[in-house]
Length: 106
Image (cartoon, rainbow, N blue to C red; front, side, top):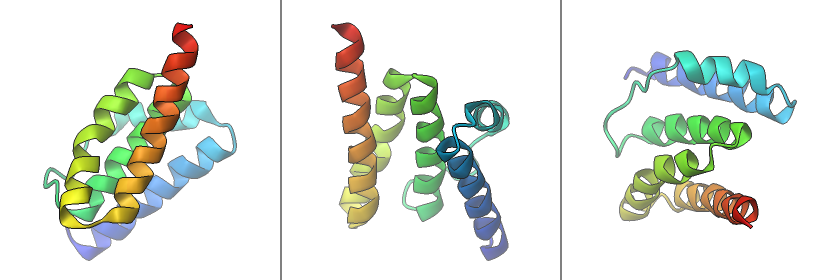
């Protein structure tokens, strides 16, 4: 992925994040429905950005199992390559998802 493409995706990810922060789940859902992952290399930092953006949308939609599944591999790879911030971000969202999952099963 070129530097331009990396910046372009980061901009898309920020828009999705802003939609979610504003409570506009419909716009974020439209993005998620049409988006296909562009980065397959697990060690590429954009791999982490893509998965986190999608996981945030899934979390907002209440797709808790999908959040946990989506973040498992990127969290492991982030830990292996020393991206501690990414790993902590993944684990934080997974913890919220597990908490929500537990709350819905009671």
